Image (cartoon, protein in one colour):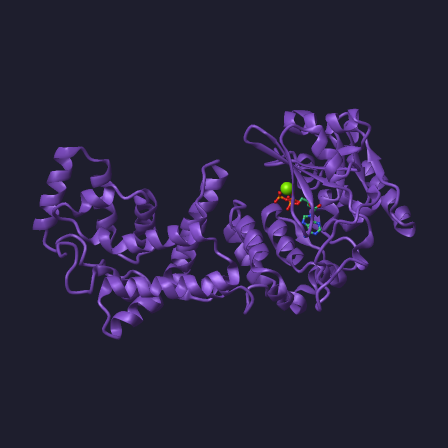
Length: 465
Ligand code: ATP
Ligand code: MG
């Protein structure tokens, strides 16, 4: 039955390949099997309001892909033939945003839906930069042209909640079933128009565990440097999506496999090519992935602070070796790293200041006497700094004892805290300064030595000021 169904789909698709893909394959609810309960009521509200006003309106893109995979979409994009102004007029809280690519944000309470007007096939005539990247695209057109303009076959399907039909212009349903990621149109041309699509291939392949079809994959290694011409803020947005996808580790591994990290994004060069920090970064990404899968929030500041920590440590060590005292040395190292990343990645100011807070808190965890630990507990970013400390312990960078001490202090009552302060002061090593003998190979040992910068100069340790 399923085989017959797939053959039917493939058959239609093959026939269509000979034509020009202006007519979609239409699948009924019984054929595609989407569970309507996975749809958000606000998505239905938007499509039905548009339809009642006489327009076409569909759920589109990632949401249809996820619905077909039986996954509850995290957000819903809507495509319509109404212009942005026409959309705006239909909803109380609707805002036209974007210059390069105008869309309407429709808000219901906290829920935000993106409504996009069908784009026309004029991408070839759209204004471009000297590398062929499309600079602006607000050229509207019919639905089949909109489908052609989308990135991958699995992202180019339209679902009408009213009729429960799926419209498939490019064989997306067959690719979903084959777990294949296939770019629409001529791959080189599509990457040239928008090099960010190369990052998107990787993200979807890793997240969905799909195979990248050879023709889609092949040009990436050669065309990767085109990402350098994309505005930093856009690369950053896409990187953030990648890192927050719940599959960050797999995504970064795949980026490396496709040759997309090399010399492209300074962040990735740093992250993926440093054996010393690999353990730390792996743990950080695993914990991010787990938090996202459990529906918990992740702060971008924490994430980037983790990814760049070993670069900070390296520079911190160098400044100290050049005679700078530990705390100013750490600030200088943080300045250097933030500066180099901000330029290329457009790290937002807020994220940068969160990262700085997390890093500069680290030496303060070494001080486990007097009022210092109480003061640190009151730090607005204490929780992030403490989680970061635990990652450093887990990765073997610093002694586990210090993390355990802080966990007990953080969770303890007044009496327990006083007891901990006394025992830290009296302990054989003052708590923090003795590092556990490395259990790993010589490279990681290097990491441990580097991290020794965290001891507040090496000679002192926890009990010192
Ligand atoms: P996610 O689950 O991450 O939201 P998504 O496929 O919905 O995945 P979005 O960035 O929300 O990704 O984009 C919505 C849709 O817009 C995509 O499914 C695709 O059809 C289209 N799209 C997005 N970015 C591009 C692009 N760079 N080039 C062509 N089409 C794109
Ligand atoms: Mg989406």
